[in-house]
Length: 236
Image 1 (cartoon, rainbow, N blue to C red):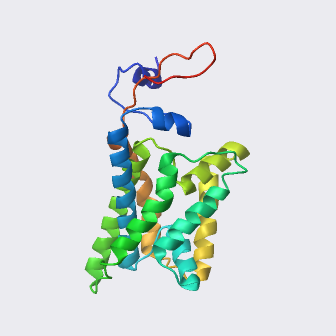
Image 2 (image 1 turned 90 degrees about the horizontal axis):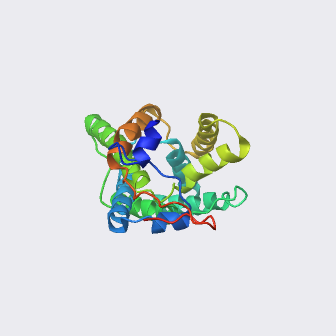
């Protein structure tokens, strides 16, 4: 019997990410736990973005884009993040995807948390402190990703764009992700966003970090009951 079937029968301790529609995500249960974890994860994600930004040593590809846009728009960094999130959600329409609660909260809370953190966190003067801020930000970003993804309330706008394109085009997930991130990285750099060693470190470390933290924070969902005769899947 496969590990997936074992997990579904409750014979293993490993929690799994369950594919669910937005309605199923809301009805799946453990709401208080999941909502709390989701909000903490999204706020921490915004804090981690502010930490990397203040390090001045380079940003992840999407934040290079956000910073580049900010240079020419004159609004707060968090505002650019929020507006970009909703702009990306418009691209979900031809992909026939619906945002979940986590997707919508992701679009707002991360930007607000980033601005709130930037309001009191200033760029350190020493190089050692800047590196500590960068590395701490990357680790915090990995923890935050594990928290909000593990709450099982749906992907963020950018991740949803990646998985939606993968599903609709048949191209590999790695190719779709690389293409999107290289595109926003180059555009952001041309607009004045900061690319540095931090950008490379983020690209190298974030995958392994999420791989470590996601299983720790993935919420075990109640087993679904068998489908009714009319084909509707009910939750326990």
